[in-house]
Length: 334
Image (cartoon, rainbow, N blue to C red; front, side, top):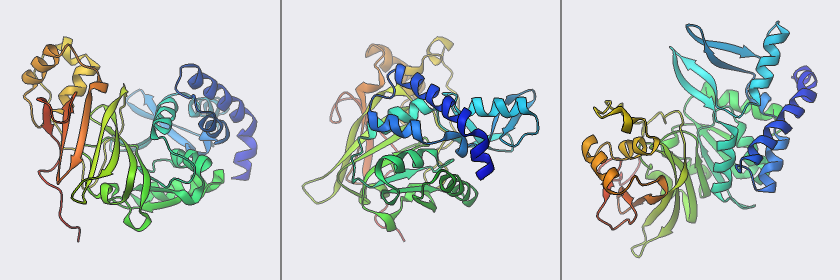
């Protein structure tokens, strides 16, 4: 690995500076502390290989390719502001390294402060955990993924870059009770609903930032008058597309809606369609969207509490609400 570091250190540093300038220029990276993290953490160490679309399927680029032109393509791609496919099984993408500018927006929206403990759901390559460790310290970060192959790889990448957060193999939907309580939870895979176990593992005032539908929901936790937990908040304005969560809270596959292409091509309508998939017929969703003058993501929110959860438009107690997830929370985990 020392040879690897020496070989790419200089060109990687320049590529990293260029990437940071680009994502800062578009407004995705405004916090100086997070900017330093992106400038210091070497992304190429977390993607020693990745896959790009090629003729007839995925093409693999890797750091030890004997062809110097392909090695240069690999290094340039490692610092491209885009997602990178890192694990493919039977032609299906199962893990990726997220787009750096989206990661920057999410980390800033997490509003983590020094001293906070953070649970990351979806270890992936380990790059996001390294950024968190750079800002908050290794001992404050726990990252979880379902497959030992992924967590072993993330742990090795983190060690190569000089970071040692706690990496756990397990079902992210169940959180990590042995490391709780947490001040922040950040999720790097798309959810069908908010797992109830997370609420019990958070301190009051904790913040959960997670991809849901095709957006990012930011929830704040509080205790209710009966001693239970409530998490509530709105979606951020920006879109977000991630690999789906696998495990106990995995999303079911949905049938395509028979609607005009003009609406299916709308990112905002697809967000509403996915958010209300278990509650509204697609044509009812379209009627609502047009009646409410094509609302943006920031008008929608989610409330979790009292053994149930629901999405809403404008007001959690208003006329437009839709149930999410399982019918009720599990009373107790075995």
